[in-house]
Amino acid sequence: MANAAIRIDEGRVLPRDEVHYRARATREDDDEVLLLLVNMSAGGLAARCGASFAIGERVVLTLPVVGRVPAECRWCLGGRAGFQFEPAVPLPDYLLMLAEVLQG
Image 1 (tube, rainbow, N blue to C red):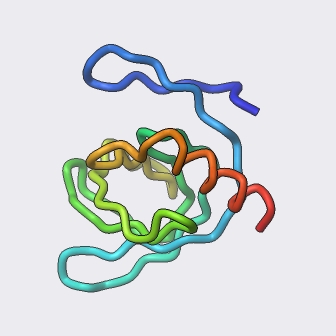
Image 2: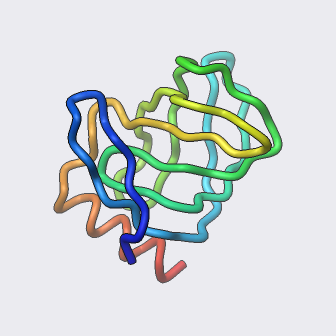
Image 3: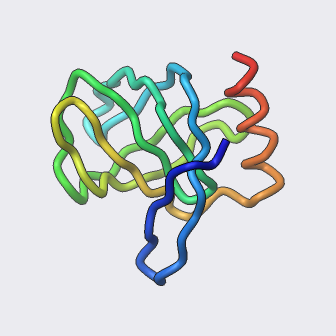
């Protein structure tokens, strides 16, 4: 499952799990953007999207099991964007969320 990695600010590397799951991001102005999650970890996720995000833009992601998770856009390029959860999802909760995402 985990065959890609991202580097977090503290220099840690978290494995990413490949997924295919529809979710949404809510912007500060309450505009909702549909996302197709393509990989995720307890620290964040990457998604395909039809909208652009500014680096540093804060959103709230609606995810299974954990609900609404604040996140910051770390990159956006060519219909894809990466978000870092703020704070990271606790590992037990992440594993439950991952199981739901992989089933759904």
